[in-house]
Length: 355
Image 1 (cartoon, helix red, strand yellow):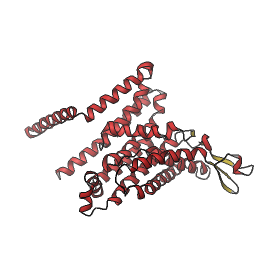
Image 2 (cartoon, rainbow, N blue to C red):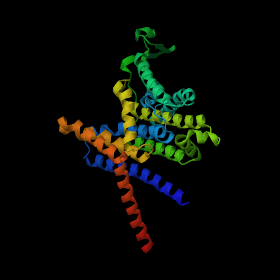
Image 3 (cartoon, rainbow, N blue to C red):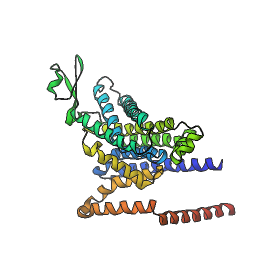
Image 4 (cartoon, rainbow, N blue to C red):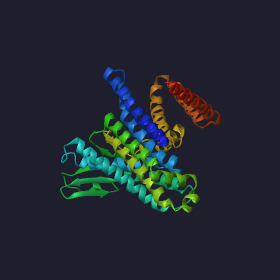
């Protein structure tokens, strides 16, 4: 019971952290103390937090390295944006349309995760990292050569150019190759993003502390021992990986519905984006969900907060990365944190006993 209370308390702290940050930001917006540039970063920030938390499920809890998380984000973004643009007139209720888009984006990314995971997660080694890296690049390149249009006769597809679609004069281009999708309804808001962060935390934290979560972590710690007691290794690995992919798809939906034009550029869905998400996870602490949230927020906002320092901006950013790495992973730093945490708990316990 005491252990359960500790788990519940830690989960509540994480939820409260997100809610308090949301209230502070809303107060800053209402008072006019938050610049328009920073306000423009709020929705992408929500997407990055969800990406960091979901990737931590694969890297920290499952113990597998994924280098193509941006690929699942890309799948969710394009599938949901395609749906929203096609149904903008037929489903005028923005909330209903956005909810369905979320389901479509999550389902599409989750299915891709299952299709990748079924053959790869049966193997031992770093094959998942190689395959996910290739998947991310393949998806990005497919979206850059894909042309989709719609007219009275239905949908038309091509990988050549718009003229190859052979549409009627009233036809509309939906996906225009490298120019992507233009005119996606901007339904994503900061409030919606925070609600989806809380939903993501609820799913991930409950999975971690469930029977399935304990099975997943036992596989991470010792696969042979887990197999010897009858745990279906492939099943639980596939469960964690597909949920992680689906949540990345949700982040893609948030991201896509915040842009006037969605394009599959390397800066949006390329290898560097996947590495940036992995950096959020590593610096926040592998397996530490709350750390992933803080790391994603700090490392996303820091370059903009330091923009006035132009020449020294990236230098300070690099120093912060090094300091965060040392604080989280240096043996001396870990020993210092444990020492002062124990001292704080002892004082708190002594005060409670006095009362």
